[in-house]
Image (cartoon, rainbow, N blue to C red; front, side, top):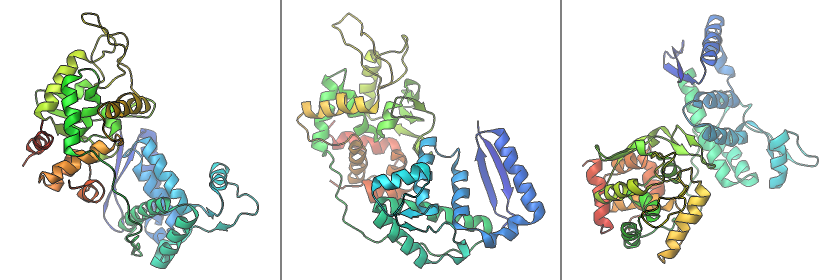
Length: 385
């Protein structure tokens, strides 16, 4: 259950929504807004609004919209915006992050968090980004700039502010393409899945659905709808096996149509899949010990961690088939790239992959080598299934 606070800003008249996990927090925020409006602060304070204020408001607004682990990542990335930048080793910066105390004889650069938004210039942002890239790393700098842009845009909408243009990052260094399996190599994986009834579906499934490893390991049988012929993605599994009733992003909640081959594999796997307390639960659980028919399987049915999945199923399966080592996430790249190569419209590919923005699909996943059901059927054709 989430509590929603709806209101219109007195100056911009634009509608805002804030989400809270607890009723108490929603009431406190409502009362604070009423007090701000009564004293005129909501309109008057906009000229004093700083970058840090905008970042704090943006992070607060993200509560309930993203899972806790993602929010922690946002907060860590925003530290490069609102905290001083320390010049030193990784251990030095880690010590500062832990206790907030700046070590002796260490140079400290001021952050842009205390700058008023109305005073912020593209020059300030460019210099700050270059500083973070030099002292912390390019990835951290780009990530922090992405958060800064989002926070400033929300502040502009809420307080009717004119913003400095956030400079573009530029081309930067050439990024090598991720190694993926080609269709003829995936065909070997799918051929093996028809023959190996106990392990190979763990390897074949992501190539036919494009799911993230956390989505695959968090899939429950209640989300496999054979009547509608779709797989519902509704949750993910955390690193240690706990289920999280949220996907990575809001767009991650989706339905993926089953190909004819995938439907056949899942129907056969449902008969052999390890149970939890005698009942079907997880689609990809711990395997237990398989004994010769007609003896039943011993154990299994619990949470399969990503580390065990990667070692016992993924790497083992690729090595057994004589295929090059690729990451589990690369199956997602293969799925997306194959659909694109088969001529499926990018917006539909993004929807099947759980991307809110098709630009992400094009910019990071497509490596070239109608409805959703028709789109995924092209996978069987591409893989010769």
